[in-house]
Amino acid sequence: MKIHSKSRRISAHFVSTLLVAALTSACEKEVVEPPERIRAVKTIVVAVRASGQLRKFPGTVQPVDTSSISFEVTGLVQEIGVDRGDKVKDGEVLAVLDKKPFELNVESAKAALSRAQARLTEKKSGYDRERRIQSQDPGATTQKAVDQARAAYESTRQNVSYSRAQLDLARRDLAKTELRSPFDGVVSDRHIEPFEEVSRGKPVLDLFVDGAMEVAVGVPENMIGDVHVGLRGEVRLPNRPDDVYHAVVSKVGSAATSANAFPVEANIQNADVHIRPGMTAELALLFARHGEEAAYLVPLQSMAPSLPTDERYLYVFDPGSSTVRKTIVKGRGVIGDQVIITAGIEPGDLIVVAGVPFLRDGQKVKLMGSTQPAQ
Image (cartoon, rainbow, N blue to C red; front, side, top):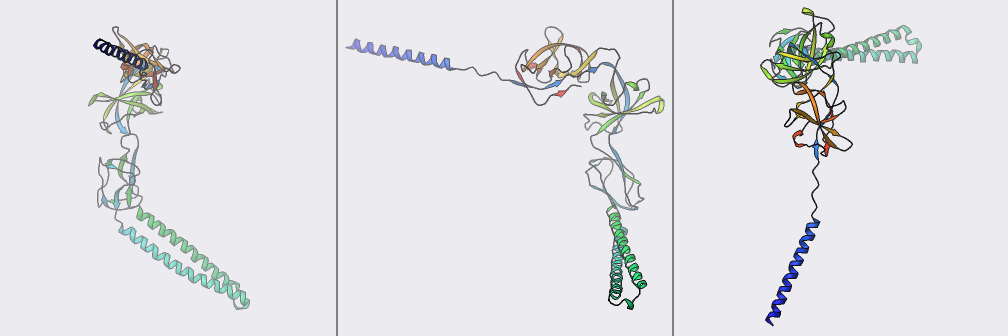
C-alpha cells in the first residue's frame, strides 16, 4: 500500500511538470515583439545656390525703421517723460505741451458757437415770421423784406457751421499737445528739454523699432553688379568675433556716393541684444562666379563623419518609402554655420537636419512639422 501511494505521488508530480511546461511554452508563443519606434525627423529642401567668392565689407549697424516725431502745434514743453535708450509702447504719451492756452481756445470756441446758435434762432424766427405774413396777407410785407430775412438766416447758419468747425479745430489742437509714440520702439535721441518753446514740426524725439536692425555698407562699382535684393550673407561684430548673424540684402543703391561706392543695406535676421545702432560691423557676401559648378548650402548639423575615412555624409529622406538614405557628399568649405556641398545631393532632395547621429541607412522615419527650403 505504501508503494502504491508513492507511485501516485510521482505520477501527480510528473503531470504537474508537464502542465507547467506546456503553459510556459504557450506563453512564450504568445509573446509579441514590440514594434520598432519610428523616429520623427526634421528636414529641409535642397535648393540651388551658386558658389563663389566671399567678399567682406565694413559697415555700420542701424535700425531698419526709424522715425523722427514732432508736435503738430506750437507751444511750451511742460513735460517729457523719456530719454535716450528708453523703450516705449505704441500710443504711449512721451511729451506734453502746456495745455492752458489750448483749453482757453476751446472755451472761447464754445462761447462763439453758443452766440452763433442764439443768433441763428433769432434770424430763423424773423425769416419764418416774414414768410408767414406773406402767405397770410401778401400786402403786409414785401418780397424784398422776405429775401433779406432769408439772407440773414442763411448767413447766420453758415456762421454756426464755421463756429462748430472752429470748436472741433480747437479740440484737435488740445489733443495734439500730447505727443504719442507711433509704434513699439526705442528712443534713439531727444532734441528738447522741459519748459522749452517748440514750434510745429520741430523734431522732438527719434525712435526706432526695437530688434529690427540692418547693416549699411558701401560696395565698389566693380562688384555692385553681383549684388541684388535677397542675396544672403553674414554679419560679424568686432567685439563679438565668434558670433555670426545671418543677413539678407534689402536695398541696393542706384547711384554711387563717396569713393565710387554704392550704398547697400542688409537686414540682420537674428539680431539680439548685443547688436545696437551705431556699432561697426562686417558684412560678408558670397558672389557667384560665372561658369562655376553649382553648389548647395546645407546646415552644418546635417553632416556627420564616415569613420574610419574622412568622408562626410548626410541622410536624404525618401517620401515613397518613408526611409532615410545615407549619402556621401563632397564639401568645399564652410560659411558661418552652413557647408558648401558640390556633389552628392540634388535640388529638391529632403535632407535631415536634426538627430543625424541616431539614424542608420534605410531606417523608417516620419517627418516632423513642415519642411523648410534650404538657403
